Amino acid sequence: MEFKRALEESYETKKVLDIEKYVMKLRAKKHDLFLIPHGTVHCSGINNMVLEISATPYIFTFKMYDWQRLDLDGNPRPLNIEHAFNNLDFSRKGRVVKETLVSRPRVVEFGDTWKKVHLPTHEDHFYDIYRYEFDNEVVIENLGQCHILMLVEGSSIGLELQDVIREYHYAETFAIPAATGNYKLINKGDCTAKVIVSFVKDEAC
Image (cartoon, rainbow, N blue to C red):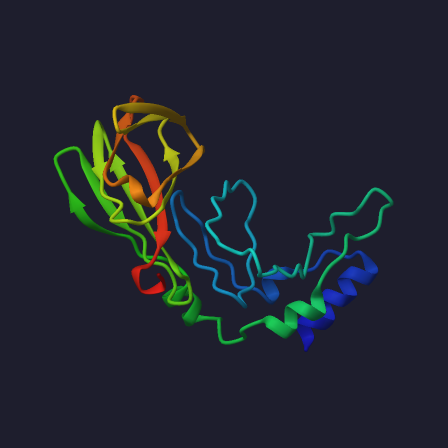
């Protein structure tokens, strides 16, 4: 395969590979969610801050290309080209990528100062994702599910839980146990707070 040979040659010669000749590129905007089920080639571009949501205690990522970043001895760092090609899903290209690997957010609930946005995940993913956007505060039901949260926009929020308030800042991650029940998030910043909430899909429980 031409792509595999190009990767191997690039590794051996230390020459930069024109990766866009072989891998589709999508322009990323703030808060976009790209879906990467197993077998999908992926990387992030320059000037991107990425929140990676995954559950991979028994799954490996095989590195195919490393942008010619060299180790301390001036040699290419180890790659896993052979393993990668043994695991690639070659059907994920062209229109399939745009139609199935880019989440399409939709507002599912809202109030005067808040809204709940669903960011659907791929059918192969066993977790689901929502984003809560609020100016003041919002109450969230966890419905017996463990929630993993991160503040992705805004300076800080308060978590009110059983008369205890904890404060979290931008890009901090925290968990809400399944037995907790409802909890409240309070915006402590001057702009709209946006919080990602991830949990296991009902059908995966």
